[in-house]
Image: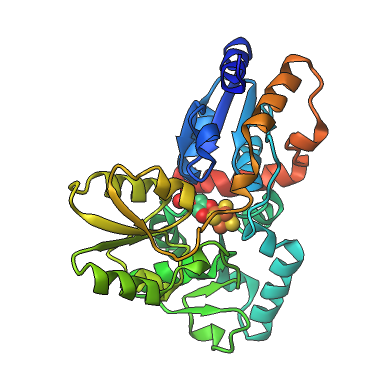
Length: 329
Ligand code: 13P
Ligand code: SF4
């Protein structure tokens, strides 16, 4: 039996669900029981009866499942951390609050919203402050809900997502530390970003528009606001897939998101919005061999601690509060 067949056999034998994000390598993605964007993966993985969730993605994704259902054992064939999620921890979070306080904004005037691409510890802090989580597919709704509080939104960690949705909603945004008056802003963003989506730029959009005047441009909201402004469609990974799949075959579309996902849409007339290969290094970490080793360790009851997600009780409690507030909306 080859590795792929071994994995399929082990999956049948074990009480396990294999989950994969769209940015995973094809060979891993093809074997998954559940695929989707961050929101869909969290919802679907929680809803399974499986005792073991083998999550092929990045750390915050596995953590979200563990936080929502601590009885599940969440294993990640490679515990790879999203570069953006690593840009903020509790210390940086508190530092930003302090900067806002110094600018004359008290904690009572702030409602924090964290993009799901953050650690459980950051989600927990947000939950303690009455805030909630959002993803790229529901950010508009969640921010709208947050604004009902009459407070300023402190949006962490992705400044681009915060700025893009503020623009879409006709609101003023500022980034902590960029010198603008924080008191003037409706949405105050933490200065984090995705290094993969930073690669896309307006010059590349102009290049494609000049070459193919009828081409459409579709990008992820983690792209810079200048790129989102110049695009025809902005959406989460799932929303991008639906948009592209619904286009007529002759319609050219250039896409600004991770390479593996765009490459899987080649039956359509797709181009990648970059002269380099925009791979997410951490998403690409997980290999078929890693998946096999993880499943085998479940079968042999020798699961490595390195591959399992653990979240302390208190952190899980508050992170769950922030996630549940999102699910309620
Ligand atoms: P989605 O929620 O759109 O899948 O995005 C996750 C992500 O990390 C994109 O870089
Ligand atoms: Fe994180 Fe960016 Fe990779 Fe998405 S593409 S997982 S935001 S580093």
